[in-house]
Length: 205
Image (cartoon, rainbow, N blue to C red; front, side, top):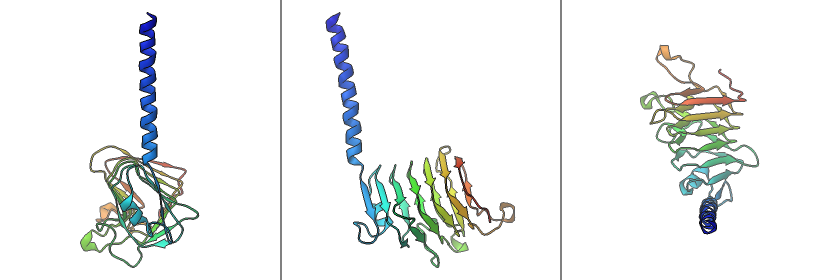
């Protein structure tokens, strides 16, 4: 009996040790990338292109005009030391003609960024967004999303999933036309997913 109990304890220890080692390896693989003037990656999208699953990208204050798809799962894109501004005003070319950031990956976090100026012509749909979302589990925290044709436009490719918007201001997005008038452009438009808005300063103007 003592030998059997010892074997059980040894097996439990081996499983626990393996779990710790696996967790440590995952933590070791995650990295923090620096984006901004004088940093390794001059723009957020250059860092996004280099990032791996679970990485964090710290974006320095400044105004950026690049736009891209976020296709890396678990990525955190975060403004640090102030709120960086991603401004596409006066342009007509957001990523894929859809949004400043097109979030196709799951469990992405967008934090402390200002997103503005997303616009496409009517021939391209007339509904460019600050964030265009097809992935699941997006969290938007502490952002300012304004003066886009859509603020957040989310339509996951598979039904279900969640989107969390917290401590975020959304204002002056959309063209002011209602769906029954042929338009569907809003501060937030979510389809095929459930959304949670917490401590939100949403302004519909």
